[in-house]
Length: 172
Image (cartoon, rainbow, N blue to C red):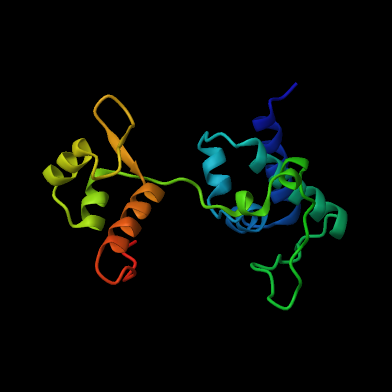
């Protein structure tokens, strides 16, 4: 029995021979990668997802055209007049409140970005952190630390609230 890679490679070769499509056009139409066939021939492995997309494209073409030489062109992008597809929500997504699903992922900022955002020097940041005047860093490795972006933004808001007049320009 052939491996998946051998099977996909043989299906692509047979498809290209029967349709007369150039390898570049096939790759572009099947998965949006004009170098797909060249990469596969060079020994590069396919992911399961990409292999499924290639095989589905070949099957769709064979079904729709009966193996004719020139496949219909796939539209490159969805027209704005079409309504977006509605997808079914997973059970986990249904159970979560909306704000938890749409919340941005936690972002970790390294020291150079913290220095650029705050305008503080490395020494000042570490001195203030030890004194409790700056958010604590989290260890990322043996010699690497980072700051949680949301904690840094909260620190900025606290600083702005302390100044005369209270509110002001948002720093982050």
